[in-house]
Length: 335
Image (cartoon, rainbow, N blue to C red; front, side, top):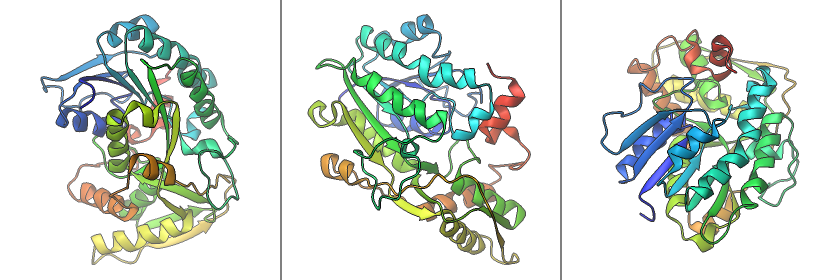
């Protein structure tokens, strides 16, 4: 362990709900700083090395206080996924863009030594390039991926030898976590296959990179322990299986039918879509520089979700807004 104390902004989100216990298992003292739109009942709050703070990253004074004594920051907090901009645009602008640089400055002022920023592979938008690496131009299609890309240089503007910043651009995450999301491509398809015995594919030709949530967690672990010289002011793609939406649907159909034998075959239908985000990302750099190799497949993520459904961990998966970021934030009139 290079550091002792880590603060995770957005630590009660989908990824944070799995990252928090993972870092505790690694021996870190973990602070979760989160606005708690989705609650925190799923966090291991009785753990002696966990501190949970309900706070808004836009409240710089509160965040600055939480940052005192921290060695590293993992910044996950954002209004997540493109569709979230169906919400009040000001909400996403203030959280995803306006709050970022003040947060970086507050972390630096508090003596934080490393800042790990979760950007997104969606910053590439649409690309016909056979392999999109970190040098590819950013062609954002929505404010979500535009702001993700705009924050990257705002971090590097303030880094130095004592304040090391690194950016990673994860693919679309899939799989089971304590705070489950069912509004991401593989998770959506699996939910519909298990719950409705039917998959509806919008478009199908779009290429989407996906990343098992455990590989995401392991990438963050590595970015917290890697030598400064290897990661300072670097950007890493993290996404290994590039599949079309239609191929993903066929994979989900096969795996769910295997996991739930005796059911009728799953119906798979295709309808046109105006969502043309399509890109094939190359993640050779993180393998070359840091030796990172994924250990988990999309198929494994689907099987994990199937096990969670069988165990009763995902009740009311279609009707409960808790699994769906936009739906819950609309319901809460989040501002």
